[in-house]
Image 1 (spheres, rainbow, N blue to C red):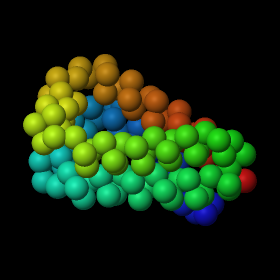
Image 2 (image 1 turned 180 degrees about the vertical axis):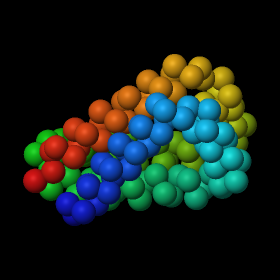
Image 3 (image 1 turned 30 degrees about the horizontal axis):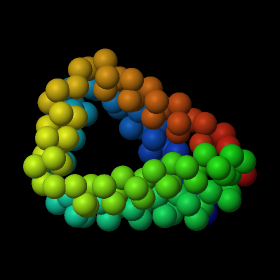
Length: 123
């Protein structure tokens, strides 16, 4: 499961760098992605990612943190699946259209920090 943690940490680092450096392009990519993908598929993907994080947490020095992130991902997948469609659409509209560039950069910084920390914690 080390490989999965390596892949997730490198994806977090890459996503964080792209979000910091190319904020408008990232926003446009997310807008196209959320408009094209079905929310049921998104929720299943999120839940599977969370379950894989829960399983692979033992390959980390700080397994409690990886388990917490995995549990939050499973909960997020459930919430995406269970909330009403109009609330989901408002949430995606807020995330894609209303957030400022500084907030996107903050999310990029947090993703970069999380990916780097996870990379350093792998056994």
